[in-house]
Length: 232
Image (tube, rainbow, N blue to C red; front, side):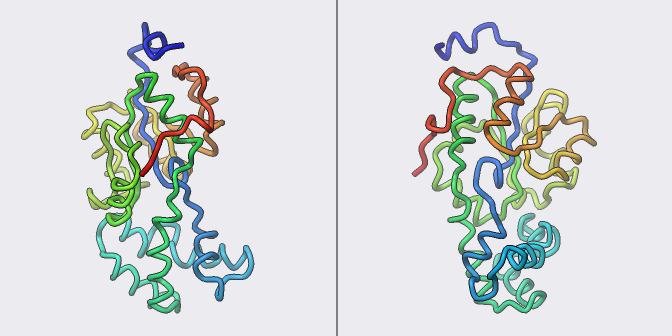
């Protein structure tokens, strides 16, 4: 099936797709990240989960302020070190390791490519500190497939707060009922529901493909994990 065939006669009422990044389009496994960077502190899965809670505070607190562009990486480092007992050097090592953790999830990239080729409008809404937002923009060409997007650090507020959803929808010029939000955190899915924004809980690209197809969204034939977009 050609791209022309796939888009011909499409339903103009189809939803515009709004993607989360970490855990959806990009890998985000914070417990494994911490275990890799702090092997002297973390020897078991339980210890990794403990330090994940302490370090990231469920993306509230210090890391949430960093996500929302309210504090710098240096202030985030100093706050986490003072609060957790980790040394500033240990916290800095974790902060510096985040870009390598944010590797593209190629099966989701392949699905994104298929959606773009089929003519769907793509947007993103991501909690992301400014240094990592810049890194992703500089290193991954497939971000150009998105028509527009919002990083939390650039609007000084983040999910699951409702303000960032209002800001994003207004910027995209899309009404809630015209969109479909895709995120891996149930708290963010629940926040979207408060606005009447339909949402899908992401668990895998294969499941997302099934969920989108069940909603009548067109995909080009040949979608699969090997049909990936490039990054530089």
